[in-house]
Image 1: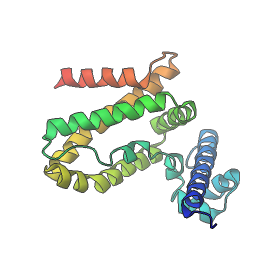
Image 2: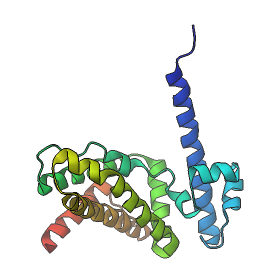
Image 3: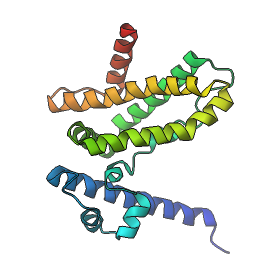
Image 4: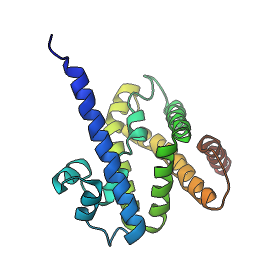
Length: 203
């Protein structure tokens, strides 16, 4: 009996994810030690134990290397919203998606540590901030047309709802990092609720 193709693909996907995690860890270590400007792609690849070709295939740029395993929020947007939703209903659905992903992140110690380190670096590395913004725009370009067509809203409405939900999520992650450094414990889920409440008060 021949071996089914699905498990082989699963192994490949798992190895690809493991390699991505190794590249991300290497980039984080080097950026914390030498800064983004002082680190080369070759140094990251060598520390991760991969070729430069593999690095470029998986990461693209050295700045993107710390976001290489950062698909959880973007992937969660697939299928969000229902036909006939208005902008408020879509915003509520997006908030629920981000809240669920933040709760899952709270429960994943390894991913939580990586996110914390990345948010700390973004605070004083403009190159990483630029990469983060670029990835966010790319994700929006990927999902906005599909969501707009399925839900029945204008793309501007979808981008507006996604912008508000994304702002809340980014603010949550940044404030979480700041509070952690001050020794103030806070779950991402609880902090996300706080951020949403403060934004509601502001508008």
